[in-house]
Length: 212
Image (cartoon, rainbow, N blue to C red; front, top):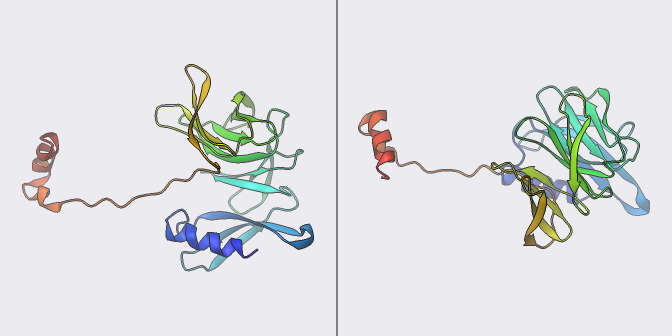
């Protein structure tokens, strides 16, 4: 259980948790006792609210916050991905088929579809954003993390490392060797030389075109 506050501290410091974010926390203790909840935490560590998931997502592994709902991936074979509203009320099962088993990370594809990695089904699936219906899948042994790249190819991970699925050739290539987990986006600070605006915005555009 001590790993939860330690992980939260790291995630807040490196920008993965921002003001108002909804965070999924899970802990497994001695005697196989466990607990899980969706919590909203301020950057100062204040818990702003929580949502218990045991009744509907008894073993959650990932969360995907969308505009109108929250999806929780679950290792429970009877409810692969469950939907909640922003207040935490259950909206029912989003997806539950044999194509996805032990769902882990989810991501929003470039066209709005939902991607999900299946650890036990050895797949990455593409689901309809509105209905959760299965649209397609590809082999991904022990899938854990998933993320769509800007070129449309799909990054996925497992215990052996990180792979890229080429949507054109429908093949995966390993690009990193080592334990692979879930992916996250980090916003890096950018320093801008404000002297380029000395001649106004048009001057800044001209400087950029000139490679200055």
